[in-house]
Length: 295
Image (cartoon, rainbow, N blue to C red; front, side, top):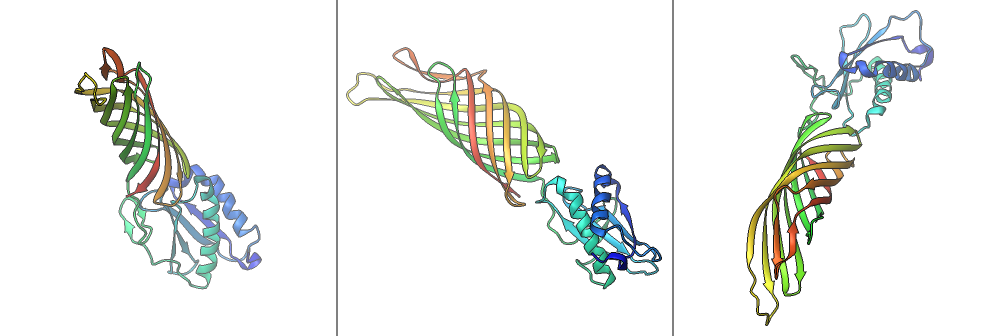
C-alpha cells in the first residue's frame, strides 16, 4: 500500500453494479487504505460492466486529474464465485491506480459498443450454449418394471443467468430374464424442459418438462423351448421433473449430476406366458452423471 503518497480516488460505479455497490465501496477502501494526500486532486476510476454483461466481468477506466490520458483495464471473472467479485474489484482498482501513475496500460484500450457500455478487449465472448454428456440408470416402478442403462446428449441454452432450456436425446437398453428366455429392451427418448438455476461455481437446477420416447421389446426363447419370441414397438411418455447439481471445474468444463422423476402416462409391457415380464409402467426415477462443455 502506498500510504499518503497515493492520491484520493473518486469511484464511479455503473448501474449494473448497484446490487453490490456497498460491498465494492468497502473493498476499495480496504485496498486503498484510509490515508491519502489531502492536497492532491482526486483520481477518477470508473467501473463498467463488460459488453457481455456483469457475469463476464468489468472494465476499469482511470482518469488522472488535469490529463487527457485514459487507462483501461479488463477484469474477466467468469470462473470466480459471485461473492468474490467486490474483493476482485477492490484489488483491480488499487492495481489500476498504481499502474496509471507510472503510465502502464494493462490491456489494449477496448472499443465502445453502442448501448452496451465498454467492451472488455479481445476476450472470448461467453456462449449461451453448452452440451452435457452423461451416463445413467432408469428404473420403472410398475409390475415387472425395467431397470435400463443408457447414455444421453443434452444441448442446453441459457436464456438468462438463472433460466435455461434443454432437450436431451437418451438411448437406453436392458435385458429382462424370464422362465422361457429373455426380453431385450431398447429405448430412445427425449425430455424438453425448462430449468431454474441458482449458484455460481457450485450450482443447482430445478427443471420441469415431459419425456417422450419409443421402446422396442423383443423376446428370445431358450434353445429347445416350444415357445417362440415376438417383438413389439410402443411409444411411451409422461411428465417429468429434474433436479441437478453441478460443479464448475474450468470456465468451459463442469461436472453434473441429474436426478429425474416421472410418471408414465402411456407405456409398454411385454408378457411371458400371459404374465408381465418387462414394463415401462408406473413411475420412474433416473440418475445421471456426466460432464458439461461450454460451446
